[in-house]
Length: 440
Image 1 (cartoon, rainbow, N blue to C red):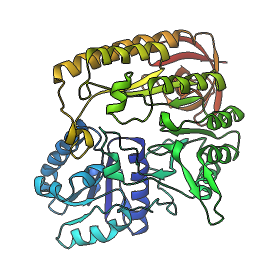
Image 2: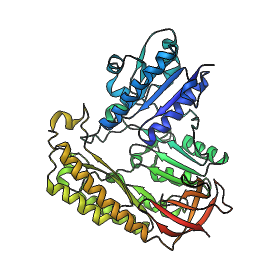
Image 3: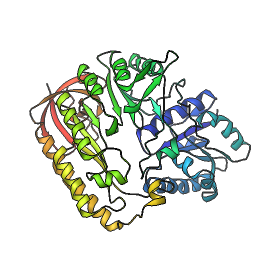
Image 4: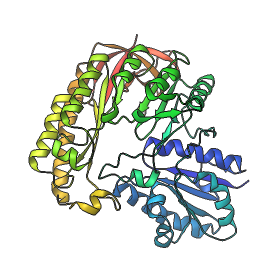
């Protein structure tokens, strides 16, 4: 039996895709190896959202040349968004890459690997308007047996001016809701206690069956949450323009739908939001935040932000800082703008902010968010949370860690707690990233 080894870079969607890839190839007779040294094929599942992500992959591909020199039969392939973006160019630029496969072509991987085994090269980057991999049961790779991802839709058609995703993952298409519910129910039966429903924009999930009656995202959430109250349900990612009060009402009706919403803002300036083609204003965004606070007073809110987008002035940057002070996010993913070939911004806008200035603005955002997160966490001292225990703390085997409904990590003395169970934990101390507590 030939073996594959999968390395995954990027977002949660890529990790979910790697589990689909493993299932497809396992069904074709390949073994899934946990060691790169044992593999006959190394599959690198990639991200193209920022240049830094692509450079990491290129560096890794070049590292593998030495291993291929020692083992001439070893083949390397690049999959996912970077493969879709660069296509056959990638094999020309990295001569030790034998195959590239886009996100909608994973079913054809067995045939591609067969071609490569015969000494050829292979490329398949055709995008689909229908592929959702709904019939494939993922192979859960290196998970904790407690939390799992479920992909509910693929693609994106928002066309934010800076973003390459619509070009690498194609148009939106939603998966049959019954297959999603069945997958979540199966996971619960196998001992999993948390699922995260994934999509580029889960709020726009909509499935229309043969009866013509649509199933929307709030209705899907209601069905998954109803499987069992012991199954926690999370989701990512929400687009602010589509976050509805109906979804918030469903969340409020189910204690097992986690009180955490990731709501990417990208900028606090209306002018920049228009240039980014985000399709909402700061006023709209703050109205959605207010609605979250009204329906779910204990909900944490996290975000994404870009520093130094095309034409961003100091005033625009200050407006972003002011928005952070107003919303007081519990966590934020903060990045410098990275121009991506093929996007609207790359074709029509000047990347006119220097790297030094992008870095300065980013560091200012990071410093402010760090202070806010620490202040938010200090307010948690004395509170008691139900925590899903996930495993041992990285720093001490005498302590365990888990997350509360708000997706905050709690570290606490082991006591008699075991992974996969719910325990109540009192918060005694905090850092900007972690709550430290005691079993109640």
